[in-house]
Image 1 (spheres, protein in one colour):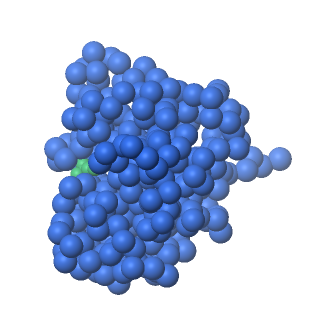
Image 2 (cartoon, rainbow, N blue to C red; image 1 turned 30 degrees about the horizontal axis):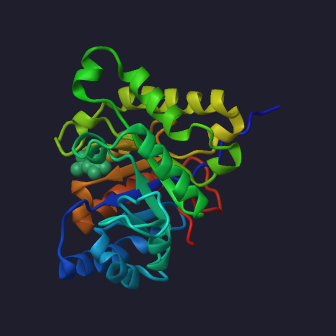
Length: 273
Ligand code: PEP
């Protein structure tokens, strides 16, 4: 009997980080809608603007099929957490997916594994999509720790989370040395880590559930390198920083993801609330 190929739609996220201003965010969102909305049937697309522009950007992309994402969240309920943003606030402005454990939060803001884990739980409990970001530093790669670091970050992030909550999970493998540096993992090196992450999920849950989880690659993805990366069997699209700040390059990357689609599912990976 022929084996069943897993059904995974590619997912492409645009992480705007601490960039744009109000007017620029609205203009960029409008251009992305113009260039990318028609590609939503083949690819799940989300943009992650700064918190303060979420509502404005949400109004621009409303009804386009492009999802509104947040770059971070705090795991507490509303209350005395000065400067933080809760899942209910994010839902209130139309957010449907959240980045958790981005390398800039892990390494610049020293976010510990326990907090990342709590954030992921809060995101799932709120019924939001969680994009768990993992990745090794240059030193860790040089000292042969790539597998251990990525496996540990995934296992610690997902600890105790039951199989039914795998559905709203997206993983982003983002080698720290590749983020914002112009250096990209080779397609083979990236595939090796994606395969490891999928087999780690298969050991923790089961093979069938693991086969359904989209695993994005992130780290200096651009119009030129996207197609080769996304053609790898376990690379399901990309999380894009710098190149997502221009609608033309972001749109080219979405095209590369759509082309890489091995089988199309009717279900969206990024969910609307
Ligand atoms: C990111 O912010 O997640 C990222 C991958 O950035 P860049 O594409 O600029 O490397």
